[in-house]
Amino acid sequence: MSEVSREREIAVEPDAVWNVLAAFDRIAGWAPNVDHSCLLTDQGWGVGAVRRVQVGRAVLTETVRSWEPGSSLSYAIAGPPKVVRSVVNTWRLDPRGAGTRVTLTTEIDAGSRPPQLLIAKLVGRKLAAASDEMLDGLVAHIAQKERTS
Image (tube, rainbow, N blue to C red):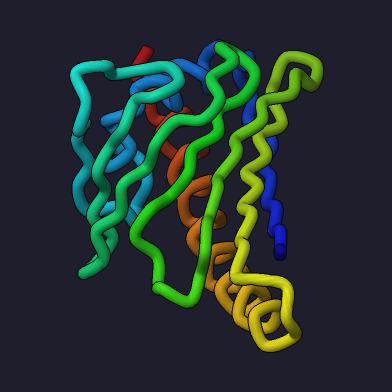
C-alpha cells in the first residue's frame, strides 16, 4: 500500500468547501483535470452515490465510502490500470481560524510484493500530480465564487 497526501489552505469556512465537494456530480466544474462527470445512481450524495468521471481517455467510476458533512468525503475509484488493486481518495476539511485546511489523501494498493510496491509508488506520483490539480482547481473555484458573491 502506498499513500500520498496533498493539502491547501483556503480562506473560507469548512462548510463553503464542503458545499463544493458535496455536489458530487459537479467535479468537472472545478477540477481542471476532469473533462466530464455525471451521476450513475439516483442518489446524488452520501455513502453509495456513484459518479462517472472522464479524465482524458480514462473513464473512472467513483463510489462514496464515507460521507461526513463539513468534515470528510472518501470514495473508491474503479478503472485505474489493472496492475492496481484499489485506489481510494479521501478529502478532509479542518478548520483553521477563519479558513480551512483541505487535505486530499490517495491510497493505492497494488499488492505487497516488492514489484507491486514499486508500482504503487509510481502510480502514487502520478496521482499526487492529479491531486495537486484538483486542489488548485478547488481553490480557484472557491475564490471565484467569493469574488462574485
